[in-house]
Image 1: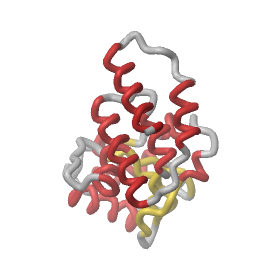
Image 2: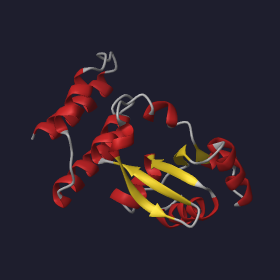
Image 3: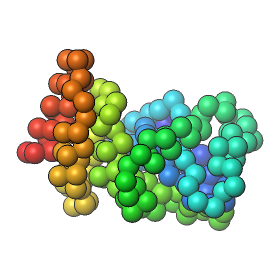
Image 4: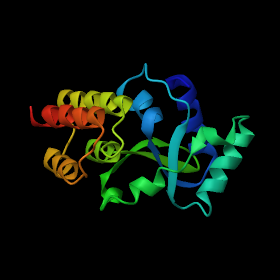
Length: 171
């Protein structure tokens, strides 16, 4: 999906689903960081005001004629593992029924660290550039501490990506 399609779906979430939602992953990158970015699904989690956010997302996907896996709420597992994530979100879109938030630059990076695929690294580097050019708050020390807290990887490519991210955060 491209940014235009993602934007339309995010609009529908805000118009049709009550409560607060957090947009993550490639869909967020396409809307906030790099408009040319595409993604296969939209990572979004409900966190306040919706009785059963997963069911609501599945129903919305079905109502929009999308495969139900298009709206993926599994990211809540990773988000809720980060202390204080609730204070690291900012409003992205307000609809008539719900609000969609995005992570801060710090939370975005913290969420990408564990997996840090090649695409994740690219997204992180783009975000750091955006944070610098737009003077967005970014707690580099917190991200570096989280990076230091990760188990060493036997995967040489992952280790190299982590080193590249570290170098960018300290430059």
